[in-house]
Length: 388
Image 1 (tube, rainbow, N blue to C red):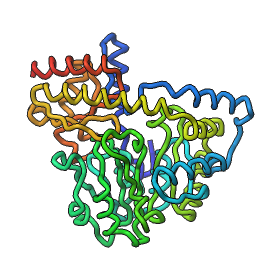
Image 2 (cartoon, helix red, strand yellow):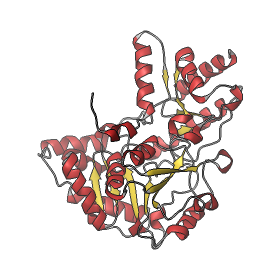
Image 3 (cartoon, rainbow, N blue to C red):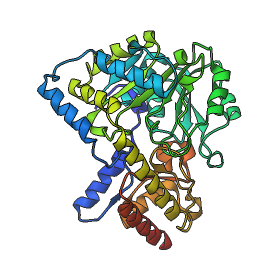
Image 4 (cartoon, rainbow, N blue to C red):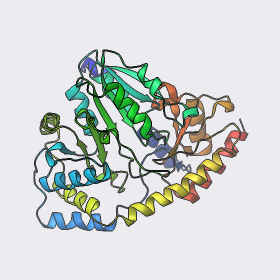
């Protein structure tokens, strides 16, 4: 079938491919413990669900403005102003069906063929996929285990060239759970701050799922806000993956362009979903706190268990809900071991190479599953690895 040449440059998200393989095995009667998908296993809080039901009954079932309902944009502006300690206006907010469109639209708006983009590796695979798609060049910023899966300012500085036009940051990070500290963010700001040709895309979708210290955003650094697109959403924090609701905070001119892409693609985000998002941000946060506390408990269980398995070593993630164990001592490649654990042990995880070249020698497991299932998975992995 004839397709556009650019389609050959578009990647995928391996988690969904592994999920499909796992479901196929389950259909044949095999028990599988799912540690592949980055999706909270909690129900969306009741107050949010009730708000959506009321919104539907109140007639929020029609088109809304492409940039989002004014009332939600106002609430998001207040929330970001408070949590990032910076002033945000409603017309600096664009609401999209999920957070991915902000990534997609920002890259489409900003990058030209041949531009260089500094992005984390291992990192969320859609970063590199979209950069390649528009004909720009990914420049990989290694996240090293010895640096707690972060990087140094010197590491970053070496990659900046006259062709650098975008920097993608993700903290807390997928797939490693690493966090970029405040001093490193300040160092980045000193290097590229004030260069209006360089846009920073700061992916902060895990900002509320952090276990040690507090979340820091590069957008909060004086003089950097206008140069930054802050990406956040509702899927992870409020267990709203299926609701498809995210947003970006950016300078007003860029927001106009991003909203225009929304008009040309999705038209708008579902209006009743947006009313539910207002409740998510303004309503009680008890369920979020309970979820994060449970994730921390699960983190401790899975890290402790993985470190007892022959050939595995695992750092303690500081945020998100992923572990990224080093498996080089098993003498198996990441892909070989991930496939073996799925087919032989019935544990679905991801090869570290699904997240870029610097994921070699690692696996990613999501601990968005019960402690009972995590312990079951650990036993299955241990038994399977001892047979190697």
